[in-house]
Length: 72
Image (cartoon, rainbow, N blue to C red; front, side, top):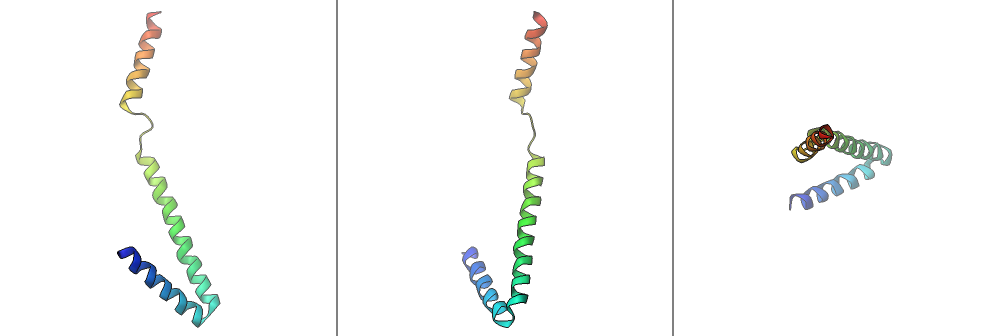
């Protein structure tokens, strides 16, 4: 329900900005959209850093393969 209210408020704000001065409305809209996109990219990068490259299963498997190589 919050999403619907956010969309309606953004729609009303957009109409008001375009009615006042289209150039200013476009600049503000571009700033909002660009800011949201950049924030999303930053959050995705932080999420990628949090995920470890190797998990326990791959570490155990690699140690098993190394032990097998040492036996030969």
